[in-house]
Length: 406
Image (tube, rainbow, N blue to C red; front, top):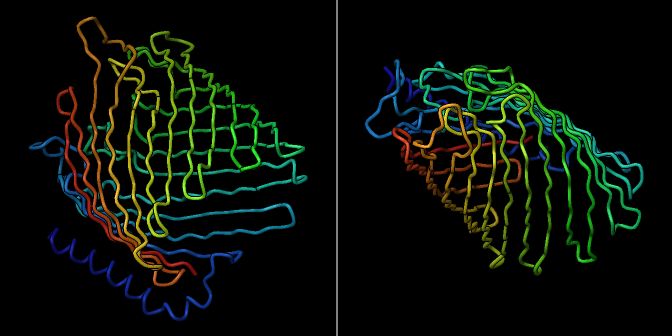
């Protein structure tokens, strides 16, 4: 039964791609990335041999299976309009996610981003935007293989950049963010915050720059949880230094370094602080080959019984080769070490910090026969080794996708 259903799904995907190809000559005459309005339709079909990222030999609960096929289809619209110094952008997409075996994970989502790139004068400009993203919470830190948990994130942002002579810049902004889970997930609970930021930037004649920003966030978790010692109100104070250095016409370096102080207004046990940042190096080794190397440290709240936050160090490399003007081949590999730090309500001198070592690699190919059409195939391997029981996993994914713009 499932075999027949999977075959039907694959045939639907092939039929969709065939229809796109058959209409190419007509649609390509109208599609243009510079158009004010563009419509998009696409599909992505993937096979996961370990959908729930479970350890070897462990099966998911209920009727779900370790492997699954997922068909994602999307329809969207992009609007890009300029009026003098002003620019208006609107991106909307409707996504339909269908799982062959774990059909309780099926969901539809509506995502958008509306932005006004405002400018009073060429020296005073900024952004006013509103964004909504809906997606399934990954199973990386969830053991619930029989529950759907959808996260909805909404962001409203205003910022400005004032530079009378395009040398020194005065920066500022305000952000409102709300993240809501459809089911309880204590480690990354639903929350919201309001944030203000201020900073300065110095621009060099070579278009390089260095900038310093200070941020203040005041937030609320979904509720106070006395059993797990998770407070409702929290605050964060953050400082971040950013820089861009174009080393030559073929290479550039992006870097940032910041420090964050997180304070729980109810339980001091959940307070933490630490550094974050990264360095990204991009090099055009030839006219057709680009190599990107990225070293990143991320710090994030993660409130379980034995820790309050995580520090994740990631080293990655991604070469991209333009075989022809229409075909691109890319590969990537990354190693990571994620540490679960701080104290939790069950921490003691006998407990030890959880440490996860991750490894990911993959290859992808993209074919763009004409600018309105894009097709791709990708293969990826992920694995994790942890010093905590039942946290190891190995996973392989293969997928094909296509998108049409008209």
